[in-house]
Image 1 (tube, helix red, strand yellow):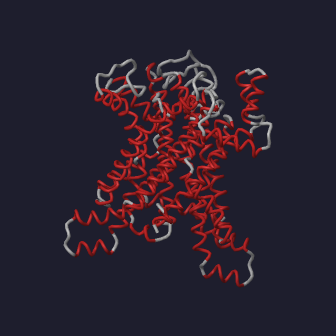
Image 2: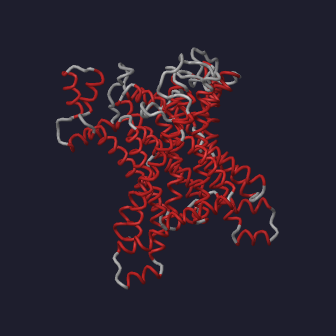
Image 3: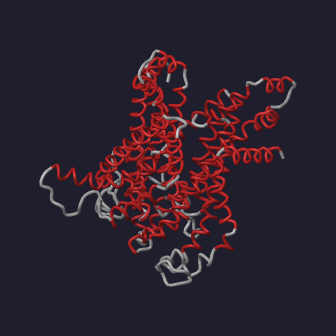
Length: 285
Length: 325
């Protein structure tokens, strides 16, 4: 497939020419393999009670044990799965939604565009985190609800950029030529416009993942996360609720937060490199 | 014209505000059950109380009457009683907490903006030097650090281990102040850690935007012309900055919500008695009247602050005064 090939080309280019991008790729490969190999890497089942609670770090439990005697290192390792799952799922759905809305607004123009742009303007002005908090509080704690809430706010930025890109591509001569020979709107969007805006969309999946992971962690930290899914934010919530720092268990707080920051930096570095590769002018539009 | 720009912005703020209120209206009513039955379940309320609640919120009436009642109670400040702090009214609670949040938000918006833009200007002015890449790279690295995590670590190191700053609250409990200065000093002492934690985790995006915008402006012809005229760096910088500052100011307007979000989390970590901590408590105790009211006040704060940022933008950019918003 063309898309896969061009993504491979982009990754190759970034790895060779963009040091920051390469650093991002290395971070993501590292955390990605932790997530994939979690069941092999984790010394214990993160849900099993394997030791007395509040154990300080020891050779058996390098990060100690939590308030009910689960191994914190295993929790952190499995947390990579939950956090990456939430981040990538929310970012992918948001991007697809934003792509569709942006293509429609940009291609059809007129009233359709004005209506959609109006909604986009309003959504951008809404203070998202407080509203996300209140939405999550009402919807109830589950991983899918959190993804839903993230998508509600995630598509807006993508739609805005895709819309303006579509607007300019629509005016190109090859699109006009295609119209002249009688192609349908649907055909033009799919054959001519989508391939040009797809790389931007890929960059947005990557950048969107950062904010999705950070927001999920924030919600979990406030006690709005899915209590059955051990994400890094959830681990921090329990550590904070049990005053981990003042029991001498500072690693319980330090390590999960470090992983959140690390993954966030990895996605941001890679996303910025992809944006640079796709369209250097676009970055801070 | 000036007035036209202002009208457009005011209208937009109004629409945003109403949208937010509508979401908070629809949400609990779209859930399975209704707000009264959710409460009844949560607090084991007797059926007589449920009847009063249904009567109060007009839940048995058509939705447009409910909406009118909702707006009436919201705008007249009749927000009912808190479940957690029972004899106290929601209005009292929220109004008592609001000044603290405004203080924290105001201070940290200023420090975030100044730090972010300041570093961005340095990086942009010395573009493609070592200083530039150090600033840019650290900005990207710190961009994804969670507020509350850094806040927790600061609390531990500077509050608990070194004992330089207090760990929680906004005032020393039980302290008697001999004069205003002591009071202000105590407030500032408690404010330091939260503000530093928020500044460090939020300045990065301003740095990146300012740097790129300054680099763009510095490559424009008019800067070359100024240089050709032999003007000192200081003068050139002044001309460049006036243009380069527009994107970060726009961003301040758009991202104030992010700083507010940071305040919610920071207040939670520091048990700072503001709206954010109130929101956290009301989630914890399912104190819905407080949650709604706190959110309402927070939205107003953000929208007013947004308008202020728009005015600042208008002052900075004379072009806007003569074109349509």
